[in-house]
Length: 115
Image 1 (cartoon, rainbow, N blue to C red):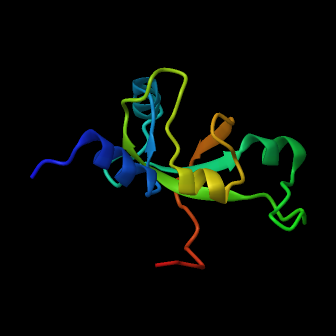
Image 2 (image 1 turned 90 degrees about the vertical axis):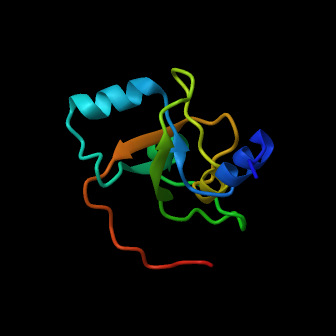
């Protein structure tokens, strides 16, 4: 049974994989990122970089928030990337916000997992 387009987007929106434009693939190839293991990116809310801190739910300003994600595919329109809702929420960003993406060769080991 083939999944509908809506099911496909709902599955992507529940995960942590990014959809980037084709130019990101070209740039990764140009700087010779090792893509065989997959590209790992640090995703940060742009406000956290410019202000250093972002307010949490309780109004307290926690340390800068970041998340590590992989790439699902390179098919987004140029100048845009698709960041799933759980990733946006974890970095304190809203839909339409700017995010910073940085390639990471050796991401840190995880300290927490929620299943």
